[in-house]
Length: 162
Image (cartoon, rainbow, N blue to C red):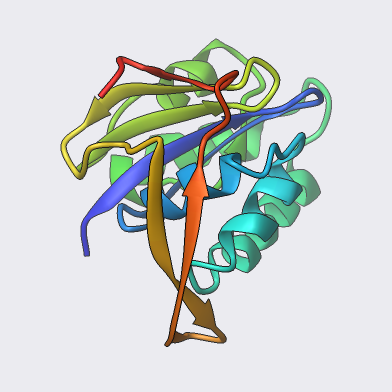
């Protein structure tokens, strides 16, 4: 499976996670609905990609359980121990996590800034981001015969433009 780092910035936090690169179009399509939060983005993307929402939110719960204000030993230990493409879901809490949140894994790194309505392709070798397209709807873990179209509103920018 080809992996990609996704970093999501919303009004309250910045979260970074590694997922299948095939989730990229689902996250772009989810932006067409104007999500304001990570949870809203993942909920909208769940229409097109199985289990990403649950995996990210579960990983975030583990992060929050083991890390607290001014106590980031757990995430720093994970960063020391894990290979770059095995790092768990994390919140950006300091310079070290910020740097990693912007570092690519296999197919690259894409930042979804929900506040600024901007998608930044720092490195993307997986697929061209399309402002308009269609994706197969998933129910459970199975694809259906239904196709859903999406189009990013004009106020969303994609950097660099495709």
